[in-house]
Amino acid sequence: MSYKRVSLIVLGVLSASQAMGNDQAESKGFVEDSSLKVLLRHAYMNRDYKDGNTDKSEWGQSAFAEFSSGFTQGTVGVGVDAFGMYALNLERNDDRSGAQGIDFFKKGDSGEPADDLFKGGAAIKFRLSSTKLIYGNQMPALPVLGADNGRLLPESYTGTLITSKEIKGLELNAGRFTAESRKSAEGRDSGGLKSINVLGGSYQFTAQFKAALYASDVEDVLKKQYVNANYVFPLAKDQSLTLDFNGYRSKLDDSYVREVGATGDDNKIWSLAATFVTGPHSITLAHQRSTGDSNLGYAYGGYQKDQNRVGDGGNSIYLANSYWSDFNAEDERSWQLGYGLDFSSFGVPGLSYNVAYIRGDNITTSNSNGGTEREIFNQLKYVVQSGPAKDLSVRLRGSILRVSQKSSEYNVSGNEVRVFVDYPINIF
Image (cartoon, rainbow, N blue to C red; front, side, top):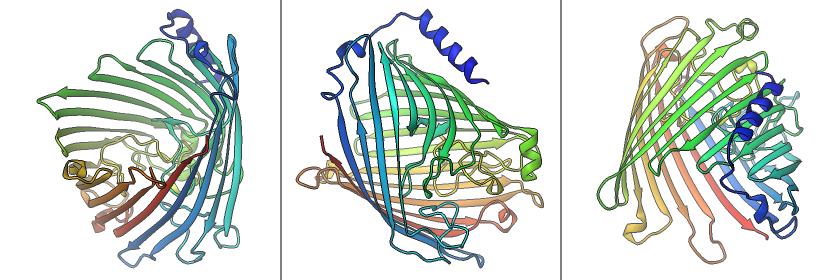
């Protein structure tokens, strides 16, 4: 999928459609619509591994400032976005840092994690009617290219992204990115990405039904397609049933298969979740299934090829059974039972609790079949509702993961604890 082809497809769709709105016509100006936001984050993650594996943990404080200008007035609006971020390492333990799934501070050539990190980026943006083009450093949030903001600092990508909302309910996206900034390292090309092209969109057919279709091409690594269908059935007052289907199809390039020593090159993975909500309670049942001949299962994420990461971001996994484990091994089948409680109905607005039990089986590795894993996930979150600390959130998360000996080549048992305190501040 070439970038030229992506651009031509998007322009063709736009030229064939009738605009239902014009965001640019409502622009108040470059300064008038501008904003500056700061996010202060205090984060700690600990993984108590089993079966003789070394425990890992990282602890840090970060500040993330994001400026977004408005668009100049006129037929074509012009603006800029910019961000700066800083992270301070509060643990600095050579032995406990360096876990792939934590990744607050990347280890250097000396084997020591960084004491602190500082980096920034900027992008120029244009808007014509309700279509925007952004070029520069940005954080895409697409099912086939999702910049991860689930650790101390977020990932970012350098490239071009077109987003069009000319037709009510329809969003189209097309882009090409040529550099990836790792969340745990400085620099704009710390991920080894050559290029990734993305194309797709979503459409809100009715108030209850929404669907999406996306594709991506990571140069010399893989091609991927994604499909989603989401339907909400309104029931009685304060009751609803939501069905959510997500599916990926991936095809690894032959050169990548040889480079990482993989066996097979294709994977298909999908999940179907049903969530029943009644008042403050929610109950989720989900099934997820992985098929194909690739021993990597569903491959996603960034940075290191020797860890089977492919460069499309740590959030490129819109699947129901993704917690500590993603339950994405070769041939794996998994089931989930989840429960959520909103304490607003009990006089404590802003407090919520979620628990889930997930079990996977039929895992295939190079030396075994029929492996299993299971996880118990818990999360308690509180968001301050008013006062000087309004919107400050505290999130406590824990997981108990147990993996059978047959599956030890794919995953490892352990207990995980996460503590995140986020304080968003709107400067203007």
